[in-house]
Amino acid sequence: MSNLINVEMIYFIVVLALTLLFCVFLYNNLISKKNKVEEAYSSIDVMLKKRTDLIPQLIDTVKGSIKHERETLTELTQLREKILEKDTKPEERFQLESQLGMMLGKLNVRAEAYPDLKASENFILLQSSLNEVEEQLSAARRAYNAAVNSFNNAIEMFPSNIMGSIMGYSQRTLFTGQPS
Image (cartoon, rainbow, N blue to C red):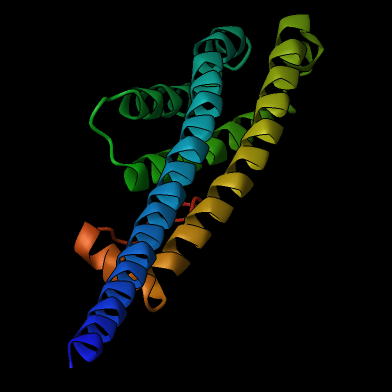
């Protein structure tokens, strides 16, 4: 009889240990995915700050040439100031950054109508810098969205959704580059 109790006790301990190991695996996997999202977000943040830092130079360069486009320059400046506010949530930031990208595109289209500006060495250099940052931002956006997709899948799929719920995780927003 005591051998039977010992065998049952061993089975119970093994099942308990395997369950505990499985929970630790799920926990660590979710932490890893969350950290990858945070890392990818910081890469995007660096690119967005680079782009935002180029705006004052672009505005100064364009200001003298495009006298009739003051409204666009003012909107660009106001949008930049909103983006630089400290307590912006990622979702809001992505929406503002998308609007900024559209405004920069409009500015470039409008600059086409000003031959002096198009020929300006400073403007050409700034355009080149902005294009480079936009390409880097596009790559960072793809990496971020891949990390977010993996994280969102993990917190929605069984059984990791249970651990994600216990940890208080919720879905992250993809950065599409389009204002919603």
